[in-house]
Figure 1 (cartoon, rainbow, N blue to C red):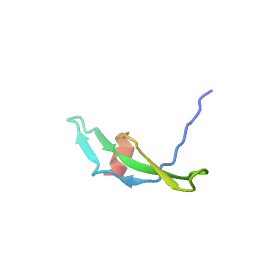
Figure 2: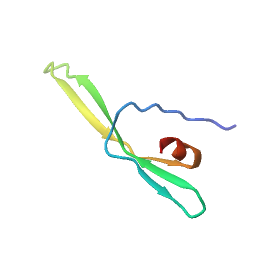
Figure 3: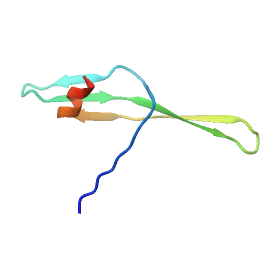
Figure 4: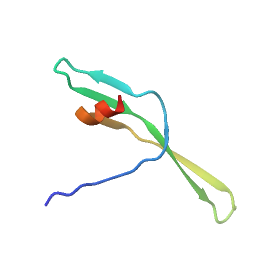
Length: 67
């Protein structure tokens, strides 16, 4: 049985998307969004932020949508 994994990333773009085209017409787009998680430290009562960078690669139709 096939399954589908789905994730929704809400963040800020780190840089402009990198678009590449191949001679056969295919496209690839690389995107690097940053997501930040904010948590409150229970002991010191200070807010801490943790930023993670993702690397996303889109092919074919999703790459066309990104461009």
